[in-house]
Length: 457
Ligand code: SF4
Ligand code: SF4
Image (cartoon, helix red, strand yellow):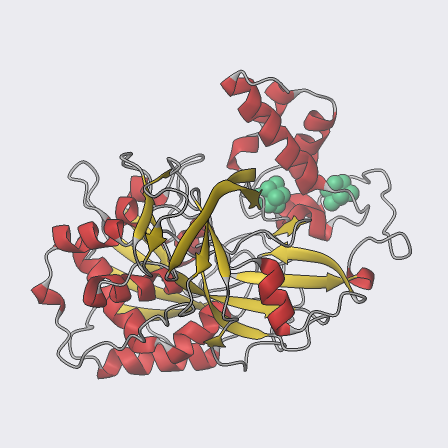
């Protein structure tokens, strides 16, 4: 396998929506607003919610741990600023609806500047043991920064029952509009490479691949050159993968590069594979080398209604409102604010919603881009064209699942493997009848989860 095998690596299904990345792809990572207040959510990851370790009125320092849990699958949270705890209160949460957050106001000296991080010239991965790396990654509150927020320690820790064999670094960023990972690859290259070496050591993986879509030749070139220049990066290979959505889905990237299938309902470690996003990898280097916890992240703020679209380095807990004000939102043009991209992102109604560890973008769409009354696409009956089946990257039958959910036949939806759906939206995207196929499937999954937990509807 070599880097010249341009674009051959891919999966079946998927779509190629307009990329719309030109708004921000040339925008260097720059500081975001100097916030006076942050709301750090106690649930920013898959797993147990943190309990607060501070009380109202307590003074906190930037980088101080303010919430944690004893559960194995969890990650602590830290204050990104110096200040005082104003309250511990419910805040809007993109996924959970409402969730507890620690609200911190800056003190008179304003927010502490996060120390800038450079990989030291004498960085040597052999100085760290696998256990040490896992411990620091846990302490630093690291979670997957490109997706659902799975705690990174749980992903990389070695398990003698299923030895880990391959580490894939996800630099695809296949969602339209978003370019934060692209900029991180261009600007924080040495940090990513140091993080890869540390993650490789912690996980014990002998093979390491950096998967980058072939619409980002500059990133492929820069990463490949940095690997060549790095003395001890043998066995780490930059792999150009075909530009196609959802190429950055873990299951799809594993299929593309390793030709392996993650079992339905399973996770990559079950087949000895670890997938880490490039931003997470850079954060591993910061945590291990400089003991910096995850308190800031790069967010693409994008869309035609934004005066200064770009990639901003912001404290976690910054409100979407503060960020949009800083970037010059034109409210008369905007119709929908999405955390993430237009395919898999979540639309929010409350602009006070805080940025979390997993918020890679704030995308603002205009009226003519969504189904407003004037521009609505009329839904018509299914014409059995089969396009949704061809587009589904999980080889599901989306129309049958949606039909079952619509008719409240959840057992039938389960027989059609509704649980395997990754909610990528490809089926809705290609449907000529404008049926919100993904919407039905998402609803069916929620109903099934409630049924299983015996929760009232
Ligand atoms: S059924 Fe699920 S996985 Fe398949 S295309 Fe639709 S949203 Fe994506
Ligand atoms: S793409 Fe739409 S119209 Fe075609 S089979 Fe699927 S649901 Fe029916």
